[in-house]
Each structure stands twice: as C-alpha cells, then as structure tokens.
Image (cartoon, rainbow, N blue to C red; front, side, top):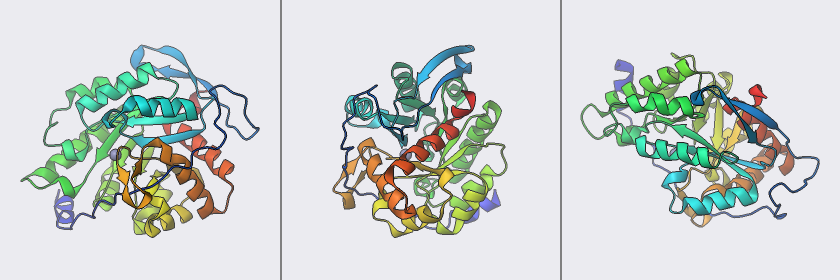
Length: 309
Ligand SMILES: [Zn+2]
C-alpha cells in the first residue's frame, strides 16, 4: 500500500466540465429503416449466464452510435434519453456508481435490451457509503460489466479514504476477473495507480473512461485497453493529442451524462456522441462513417458480444 500512499500527496486534477453540442444526424432515420451500405449489421444471440443460461436475441442491427459511459439513471430525465436513443439508434452503456444506480441500470437494461447495457459497481466517490459490496456479486452476474470503478484522490478527504478506495477497487477487479467481465475505470488523478492495480488482475477488457494522460496513453494502448472519448475532446488539446495517436481499434465514445460541458454551451448526454465521432474523424483524417462504424465494432468487442455471435 505504500505505493498507494505516495500518490495521494498529489493534487487531483481539476474536473474539466463544459460543453456544447448538438449536430444531430441529419438523416433522421427511423428505427428499423433501411440504411446505406456502410451500416454495421450485427445480429447476435447473447448468452446471459446470469439468467440461467437463457438465450435472448439482441437486436444490434439498428445501432448507429454508442455512448459507452452514461449515468442514465442519474440523468434529470432518463425517459428523454431513452427516446433519444431509440430515435437515433444509439446504444447506451448505463453505468452505476452505487447499489441504487447499479440496480436501476439493470432494470433499464432488462426493459430496454435493444439499446441499454448495464454496468454495475461502486464509484470511488461512494466508497465511504458502500463498504460492503455483497450485493454486487449478484448484480454483476446479470450485468454486461463492472463500472464505474476506480480511484480518485478528489474524494479522499477523510482519514483512510484512499485505503478504502483501493480495497474496493481491488474487490471489484477480483470479481471482474472471476466472472470474466469487462470493466469501466475512473482514474482521474490516479492514472498510474489504476494501471498498476489493473496489471495485478487478469481482466482482459478494460475501458479507461475520460483518460487524459498523454504520458501513459502509450502504456494503455500497449495493454490493449480502450479509451472512451467524450465531448471534452472537442476543445481539450490534451485529449485531442491522446485521441490522435491512440490505436483506432481501441477508441470508444462516451458522454458521461449528465455531466454538462460549459465550453460547448452546456450540452450533455448521448446527443453529444455524433459530435465526438465527427471530432475523432477530423483528428484521424478519416470520414465520419468510417469512424462511426469502427467505434461500434470496438464497443461490441469491449462488451464481448461480437465474440458470441
Ligand atoms: Zn462517469
């Protein structure tokens, strides 16, 4: 734990928040409507081990965009986001931060299986409230993965807070390893430490959420971890620099809604995702469609759903 102690002497990086947005897809496609040749068409059967080896069809044929990290159940109006997701064919990875939001994410995924995947877990900010996580084992068995989990010195004001965060993160990584689940990692101000802890577990599918360390991006790529880029990539030079050099097959998109982005006019949520795709395409010198389709393939690979088809 000495390694863990050192690092917390650093000041946490300030949360960059802001935003604008919009750029909705010009062709307002109807669900199920016929589309151009560039569309990713994947229909698969998913094995839901948590439901007792029950197979159910997952219609990903219609998905156009993916928001790999959104706090759907903590949004002001989840129904509005669901309507948006259905009408624009956006797949949402609903992440939990505690028991309540994790359980709610699971019911969202149950009810809206075509467009919602649930990630369950305890966020470092909630580590003081959620010290026992027995409930998580059952929740994880039904979920697509664990998240939002990780470390953040910003939430370590109380005595022993960092040790508690580390212990919780380790327990959750151990669970992910045991159940072979992907994880979504929050590493603000603790990028090095998160990577060190991750390396001690056999967790193959890792999404580094809002990861902005230029120095460590190469290591993240070498390990085959994903980075999900959000609206901040539209104005942050640092994030743009990470995105421009990161392997394309490991790039994902997210909104981190309901976080709103001041520099972008206060926009938030999954409707920012097309703008993120546009920005990623500009950075890589590709066309929008190419990036949009690849991000979807990457997301399915992260979920592990593409492998089960
Ligand atoms: Zn988040």
